[in-house]
Image (cartoon, rainbow, N blue to C red):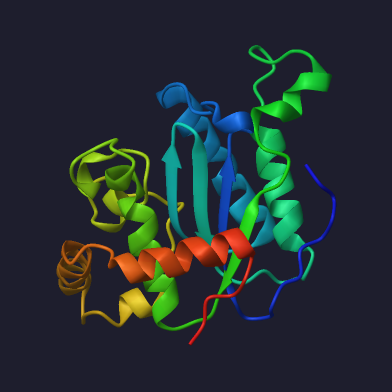
Length: 204
């Protein structure tokens, strides 16, 4: 993966996306997904960064984090995560290990406020858009089930915008279900996708 540090905006959230090399599958079974999320949790603790959403599809990983403490941590975070994911028993040759992922990841910085919520919804709808399931709660490898208390996870941190949705967790989950129930507006999805592709901030 490229060692070039990505420019970051202090106080902004981070939407990461990384795809398998040549769009090949990187998550071949549940063990791969569990291992990746365990590594993500380890890095969350090491970098002291909150994790607000994730989605693992067979060919890609998407993660929404809070702001990092240092400007160069975002790149190091993703480089470390990619290296952790390489499983020696499957890819024994060092020269080919890095080819499991594309060399560069996509990073879009997200201003506090509405856009982190929009990115959470977009990310948790990705399995539906990709044809992996019919409803977000039917997919095991996104943050939606943890957010709804179906499968609680220490990996997930509560975003302030989510906490403001209700006075208690039951109210917040119901409000978020309604938010998800509206689906992702086409214009909003296009804006998020373009920001990822252009590495431009989501704000306003």
